[in-house]
Length: 355
Image (spheres, rainbow, N blue to C red):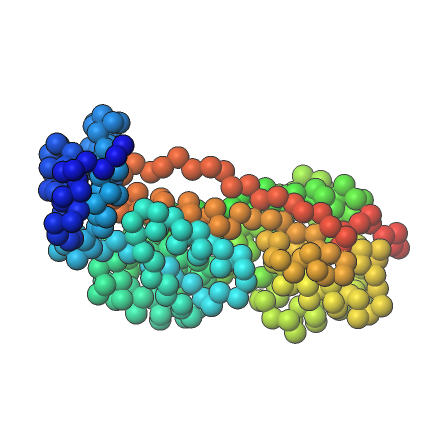
C-alpha cells in the first residue's frame, strides 16, 4: 500500500501523531485505532484488512505510544521490571535478552533491577515499581525467602509477579520454566544406559527452585531404575567452590566410590571435573561427570562436559509475552513446551569396574 496524500499531509503537518489523526487517515473511528494499537481484545472484532490498514498507517506516520498519557489514564507505564542477582552466567543473560526482545516488539521497555538475596530487598524493589508506575515484574533466579516477601508485597500493591527459568509454583502470579523434570531424567537415563548404578548427586541450595525441581527429576528417574542414593552420596554445595572440592574429595575417598557424579549446575560440574583430575583419576574412565544448563564453557573443558541444554532466550520471551498479555487484559497466549535436551559429550562414559 502506498502512502496516501492525506497520510503524507498529516505526517508533515505536526508531531507527535495522535490516534485521532490515524483514524482520520484510515476512515475509521478513534476507538478502532485504540483497540488495534493498544492490542485490546476488541480488536479481534475488526476486519483483518482494517487492522492491517491501521497498523500500516501508524507505521507510515511514525506513531509512538505516549507512555505519559497512558500512565495518567491507566496508572501504569509500558515498563517491565526484571529482578535478578548479578548476571554471572550467559544462560541468565540470554533470559534477560529474550525478555527485552519481546518487550520491545510489543511496545514495552525493561527496567533491569539487580538485587541481593536478602529478603529485606523486597520492599525497595516494590517501592521502585510503585513509584515508577510499573505494573509487572519478572523474577529470575531468586531464592525462596526473597520471592515469598515479594509475593506478599505484590499482593498489597497490585504488581503482577512472574518467575522465569525456574520458580516456586505457590508464589507469584505465574511461572515460565523449563521442564527440569524431563531434563534431569535424561541425565540419569543416559548414565544408567552406560552401566552406572553407583551415582552421586551434588546439588545447589534448596532455596533455589531450580535445584529443587532438578532433584525431583533425578530422584524420579533413579526410582524408576531401582537405584537408591544413600545420604553419603547426596551433597549440597551452595555454589561454593571450596565446598564442592571438599565434597568431591570425600566422595572419591568413599569405600564405594561413585562411578558417576551428577551436578545440577555446570559451574559445580566444572569444579568436580578439576578436583577429580587433580587426584590422578580420569574422567570418564574412572568417574563420569555431568552438568546442567549447558553453558558455553562445556565445549572447552577437557574432556568436554556432558550437560543439559535449556532454551534460555525462549524462556525470557515467553515470560515477557505472558506478562504483557496480563497487563493488557488480553487472553494468555498459547505457549510452546520448552523441553531441555541432553548434550552427551566426553565427560560421561561406560561405568568403571569397581569393587
